[in-house]
Length: 276
Image 1 (spheres, one colour):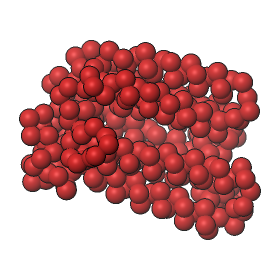
Image 2 (spheres, one colour):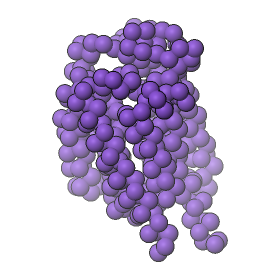
Image 3 (cartoon, one colour):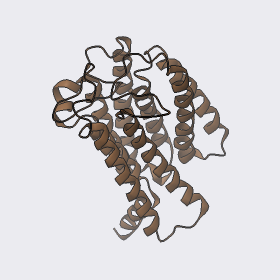
Image 4 (cartoon, rainbow, N blue to C red):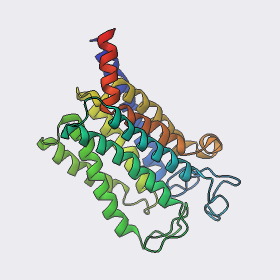
C-alpha cells in the first residue's frame, strides 16, 4: 500500500510539472520561439561552435546534440533489445509487442534527431538544425506528425488501459486533434516540442490512474526529471542547458524512463519487493 502511494504521489508530481511544461510551451509558441535560443524547437548544443539561425549546424556537423541524442537513442534501443533477449519470460505475443513498441518509441525519436541535423538528402527536405521557411514542408509534416501523435497516444493509453478499450481509441483521436490544433499556429517550427510537452500530461495521467507495472515508480521518477529538463530547454536554453549538452539530456532521461518500463525491469522490481 505504501509503495503504491509513493508511486501515485510521484506520478502526481510529474503531472503537475508536465502541466507547467505545457504552459511554458504555449508561452514560447506565442512568440514562435523568438529569443528562446531554440532551433526548430530544440536546444541544440555543438562543438567547436554552437549552432545558430544563421550558420545552422554548418560549424558543428559531427558534434552536436542531435548527433549525441541519436547515438544515445540507438544505444538505449539496443539495451531494450538486450533486455528482451535476457527476459526469462519472453516469447508471449503481448510481451513481445511491449518490447517492440518501447524500442520503436526510442528508435524513431533517435532517427528524428539524425534527420534534423542532416545536410544532404535526396528525397527529404533539409533542416540542418534550423529551417527559416517551413511553408513547403508544413502539409507533409503535419500528416506525419498527426500519424505519429495518434500511434504514440495509442501506445501510451493502450499500455495503461488496454488497446481493446474504446477509451483508448477515442482518447487517441482526441489527443491527436488537440495536438495538431494547438500547434498549427507555431509556423511549423515548434510542432515537435509541442508533441513532446503535450504527451507528458497524457503519460502522467495514465500513470496516475493505471495499475499496470509498466508505469512503475522508476518510470515516474525519471518522468519528473525529464519534464524538468524539458522546462529548462524551453525557458533557459541559452543560459543553462546549452552549455552542458542541450537537448541530449532530455533524450537520456526520457528514454531511461522508457527502458525502465520494459517487462525485464518491472519483473526485477517485483522480485525485489517479494524478497523484501
